[in-house]
Image 1 (cartoon, rainbow, N blue to C red):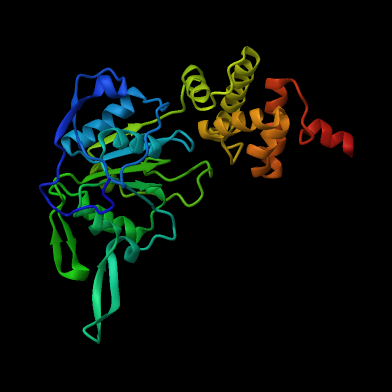
Image 2: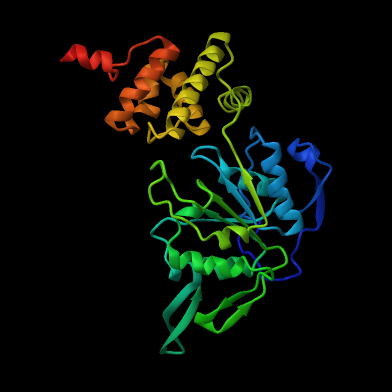
Length: 330
């Protein structure tokens, strides 16, 4: 396993794998992959479920050097999907979260003061963007629709057809490495957030959205597939009564997600959260206590009241946070 990622342009995928055999999707496409693994390759989750359409879009990005944008609600696993594809291709993957704290200097690079031969000199240090472009990496911009305007203008440069990146700060034109690939994930598709469920989301220039070769939408899993994943991750849940409990957890998650999409809630029960809930349930042996520790305690008072109502519908149990119990206390 190599900890250093080379700039050598001859370091490219050297094998091909079957999408149908490796990812279980309905496609005969064969995808280039690396035979060697580096420390930049994400860890494989053997129980991961691959959505057919999203996986095909991501694989096309890797195979045909297409720029791919994945859009979907919070908790659908957009970034994880890209990373899990990359893990099976042994493709080094770098993830950058474009929150409001990421500046143009962080992305592009900046001058730093160094001591060379006893003298103090100013030298330019590459940011994560030029560093990644020069290497065989899959660069993922997470929360793409939350990027600052100055950051988005930088990204637009590499979305051009030829993909060359002009680094004005260092008087350099970078020709991307042959194995460089570009992906992004977003909660919205560039039109902003009308419901107010994604704070910090910005509108994106439609011209920039058009520069993404492929845009795929990833929705929440079906209850059947979500059940398979949870039981695969939490292997202690083998008894029929435990499996029925997990089914009810998923039913509750469906109600919470619907409330989130409608703008009634600010939190959502993702598959990852349900896995944690199921795992905590096996540790504590108490469904309600484990639910509070895993999810409910993270919610504000308004959300707690609504979620308690959903919980009562699914499990037929009144939580202390329910409107009924609050009224009794008064």
